[in-house]
Image (cartoon, rainbow, N blue to C red; front, side, top):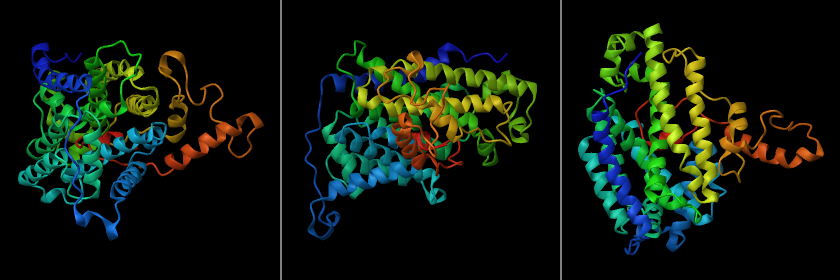
Length: 396
């Protein structure tokens, strides 16, 4: 049996991250808003039009719809202001991710990330560089979003440039926070906390952080083989050693009993973070819960698929097919679909027959057809274990 990492080590990074959680929670409690005035540069306004913000938000929505279809569908249930703000944050995360994982990644240097961080500071002071920046700048001026999670995501990109091994889970946890946990801290101020929530604000943020960690750990486990082919191992080195495994075993890509036992523990830990994340979703504003539930329920099933593949993450890529995605989508009005069994399509009956629906199924067919429109082009490939929370939200 693979032992869990020492608690003393695991708490080190968690303490660092929890300070950020407390700061953001305090900011929301006090309802602090940025007082900066958005400065729209002349070159950003097409043909003298002052519709630059609407155009910028619309473009952000298009990007979200293209790369995170199910999540985008969920944002349509939000109020227009929240929806547009979430799109803007998603696009900023994606642009940040592409610095180290996009077409020009091989040319990115630490100084380029430094410039990106300077640009971030300008965004928070109302000085956007382009149209997409303008949407982000407008968002952070309207919602109590702290700059630290954005800076931390950039730090995660720096880590990806200089690091391809992680000595222990403490190091890996910090990386997962940087590239994915940060997304939760950015998003909750926009999604909002339910007016009848009785839990502490920091507990909601801690749950959002846990979802990011869980998603990224899942990402890493699914993409072990792909990352190994790039010479990268996003697994705790000390836990590999405790399991009687080495880097050579990972590169060899053979599924042995030792490997299965090692993976069972890794999956168990990821599930623990998903369980922690579940506690926070019912505390969000009702209109903001659906995309979070959808992301949680669908992404967690990747762990099931890894197990179904007998832990072979070397020659098989675990993914959730369209039918399973549809069956796992929560009902839009459900606060806790797992507890109450409120899913869009009941498991016993399944989705309705689009081609020959009964009269009572017509409404359900409209919903299903709309979802299939977004799901049918879902990418079967994605980023490796590295990458930001934008990659976590993308279709898998």
